[in-house]
Image (cartoon, rainbow, N blue to C red; front, side, top):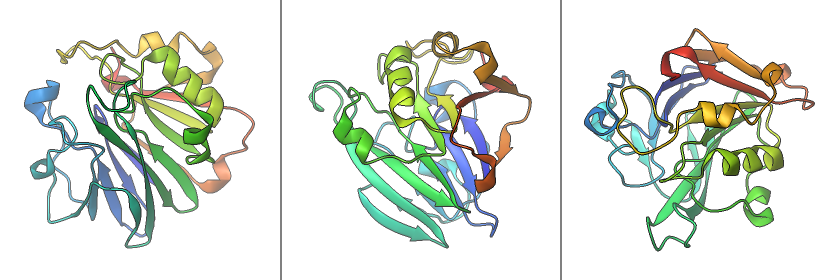
Length: 218
């Protein structure tokens, strides 16, 4: 399976069959840079803010999933878990939906704009996870240290940070470096490519890699 980072919290997940899902497509006016206009079979949206639900920014006529439940999109298994966008049980920013995807035997978790603290009850609904897509910028989501706690509890094989400040982004959020500093250098991989390919046999369960596409760093 392939994971292509489109920027901010948007990813295109593609199974070997060619079926694909795009997560949280964003409005370029909100984020500060553009998103590739690509086709897919389904869109998942974690919540209704413009940097996460720009459905018109996706090519074709995909199914839109923006609720909790279990879904099957051309063989891609999707299960969604509801949580909060803030630490006040939704009183500040409402609810957030996290999605678990199963593609080619690989489990990917997209945490959307999770803002609530890490709890055993929430972790139990997510594990096990091979690839964790997690916000790290703070303010509107969990911050770097809270994200680190989620990583330590979930223990994924791969972490791809998202929803952080770049040179084009005006949001009052932190850069990815605040998150990366919490890990040993040998755990961090900077990739020249925006698209990563994974196989279920790539994961040994003994370590966690933090992967950051260079184009979206800094």
